[in-house]
Image (cartoon, rainbow, N blue to C red; front, side, top):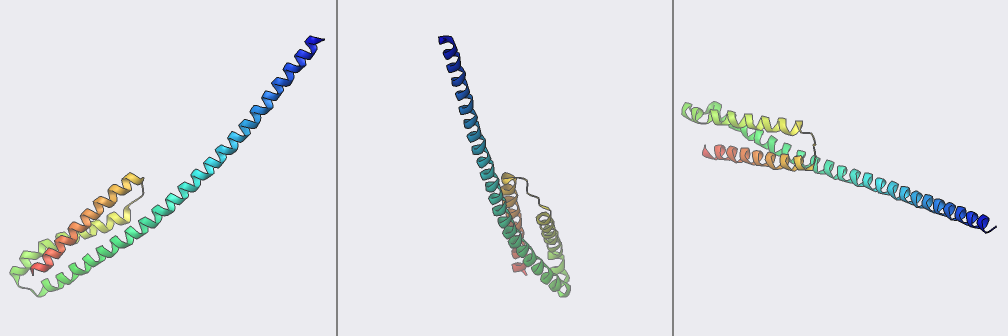
Length: 144
């Protein structure tokens, strides 16, 4: 009889362990689902922040490129009525600056996001090139 009670006790303990471990697994699954949802929300927030930053960067860059193009166009008008020595001196420089400006416009329109590190590198390099083009254009415009 004692063996019967002992076996019943062991079965009940095992059943208790099984049900308890199932409950822990349910909690772990629930926690994991919450973590996944939290991660998805963080990703959506980061993407929204990137989109906002990208739109601002693109707008600012396109504005600077358009200002450069207006300065180039105005200088070309001056070149038409200028003396031949003035034309010879600045014509090649202004064509080179216009090509750089067009290349910058193409780069900004063709950029695709490929991760935060690549975005930071692109932004740094693009700003450097845009600033160099602006400075060179100002130098040419101030020499006339």
